[in-house]
Image 1 (cartoon, one colour):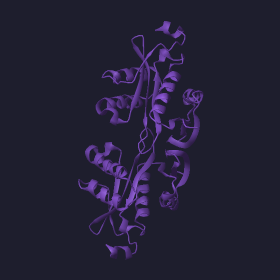
Image 2: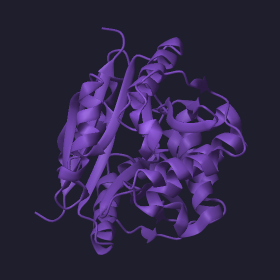
Image 3: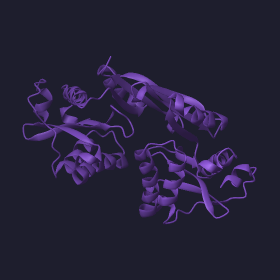
Image 4: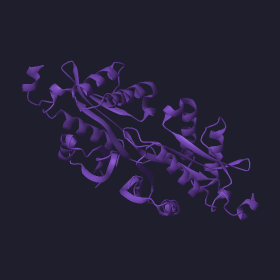
Length: 171
Length: 171
């Protein structure tokens, strides 16, 4: 795996939108590899894929996977927010730890945005924590040109705000 | 029913937190009676009660019903927001059309707030539309001393913003 770290970003991965039966396990491995999420958060990530497998498109969850040299190295999960017309949430985006820093996350985000645009999406929302340890996440979103739409102090816990990012696709 | 319109607010209703098998039908009747919601919104209101019946407390949905003289005239549905510690959402509050204007909605809201406080809730959030026809809803929330925490333009649809209200229980 260490050789992959030195590989420049080539994006020669195959992007796949079909969710396969082994994807919940793959998602667990990717999300756990980041060392960033609580076990219960990992479970939620896995459950979204399980729900997609059991309910299909009706689940409301769309996925894109980056299959790179026989390994699924990252994925993004998004969907239209219920009760809206054209507002999408990116529920999850994660890249396998040893594949980070090569632009794969940003590429997955761009592909999700393209797909959302094709689906007549107008707005994309991202929610994250305002905690200092989430600075890399917020920096990533800002580099992807998302702007802060709202901040709700103490939302997740005392001292732990929720920050809502948005990108407008129609302006 | 017209005689009920003239009855002053006495709040001699029995408040019930147990969800019974016929409550999804009752909720449908209450929510439809308001003439305020789309059919698919009514279905969502009903589904929350069905989920509570099938999954119990694990559903994350708590209910309070106002049983008044043999008729369930209003209800409120709330729950802790997943991935938060002590942030609650009031998902739904509705009063049968012919029983409105007697303070039953505000009483239900107060009882929900009391229950949330007992459950160690710190914040209560309400989400609604910024559309002109939702002015009565926003006025009701403001009279219940909720303040605007965020506004997301064009969230529900072009020209239809989402307004997030909050009440802090710990300040």
